[in-house]
Image 1 (cartoon, rainbow, N blue to C red):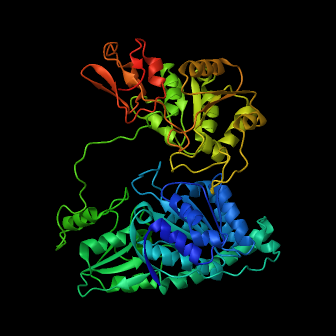
Image 2 (cartoon, rainbow, N blue to C red):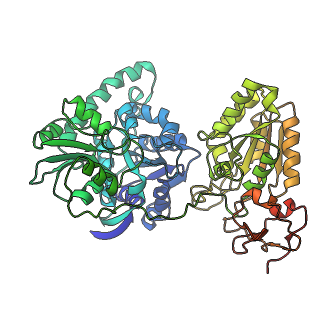
Image 3 (cartoon, helix red, strand yellow):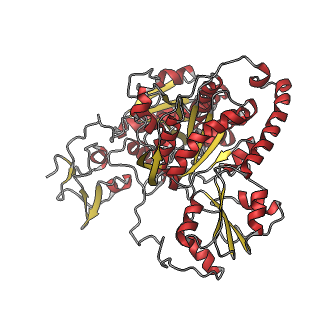
Length: 591
């Protein structure tokens, strides 16, 4: 065994590689992205020819991984928690067909919504699909659980849902790692009654699912995932899982009895009854929804849970400590300030200096256009001073949403409303919405913000970039041709650094009596091949202090002593602010 310091995501990836993984499929989404990236760059994965792919969305990723499993090889599909909503159709039905080669579905939850639009609890998907779920509490368990999950999958003929969360995914600990064990290719046998989900066959599979669930319930009573840690003091007993276990140990050490749940579905019954019988007062500490708590209460056991520990956001050592102090529980050896964040100035997120989306957003705001937004780095157009967006829901919702919005209000909004969506998001789930617009003929204008990369999650390639996950040349989707093929006749491309062209394009397409697409195209300024131009400067003698340049929200521009200033360390010379200044105060070279 070798010791390695690994992030939770890296431990999942390495555990899967060592378990005989043959392929990983994913759509990038924080906090799961690093799993696929680790596998792609891992020397052993390259040596063994492990397939790694960025898929167009989570549904295609799930289905590709399931196809590999049906063919007899072990596969992993990774996504953030909201990706489960996208792949739900395939995921739920895969629980009925079962697997051939082992299949892990990894869902990375994001309590407190560090980079997400909700904090849904993925445990509900395991319950709904009736599949086993594993939940590690640190990188060491992440490695071990990933390895064992493939064995669990193949033994019980089921996909295994592996739940991570932001803190576990992005924290490190020392992991004892072994060597790769090759998983032999399983025979593929045509089995219509197993793999064809038509009513006659599906009816035969449902009893199989229920029988499997009973076997998994028996496993939950005695397995490596769940364990009891009894203390001498039996006054308090705590049932917990995931991050909660670590916080409990940091607050109490070994002074309280703990039932650690590493398999939150199906949950044990006898183990919980036996543990509850040994302690005076029972608590459940779990982030987000009361899944374990409801199970305990259903067993008729009195327990303290969400009335003390919130269902909102993530926990910390401090939240656990403070909750027990309110209960009158004496806690020794934990400083009062532990877990408290230092007081620091607020630093709201914003688009980068020279971000190509800024020019288009400025144009929309200037013309008082209603903007139906979407998911990506361009969602930052919603914040001050632009405040450009009116709504943002989920991947692809802008394109579908503007159709209904305009259908409801007709000509009143058709000439004053646009949808904005990124290039990667458009490939993910915007295309069907555009087909719907073309097919059902609303005069809707869609703006594709094409920055030539998947930006928000760290510059992953997508089908519009012309490169695959390895950086090798790949088929490149022509967005203009695609939009025309989907039924849109009016398609035009504009440079968002050219404010005049942006305004002309927006006003002309909104005036048209048919659906239209504007592709706002310029690469993300953070891409390595994008070379910044000479930074601009402000001539203080010409600056009138009108603050018009401040309306874009560019972090390079500040206002001091009644004059605008440009930070040359941030400015990339895009020239957008120069076009705004009516007095010619911006331009030239920085001093």
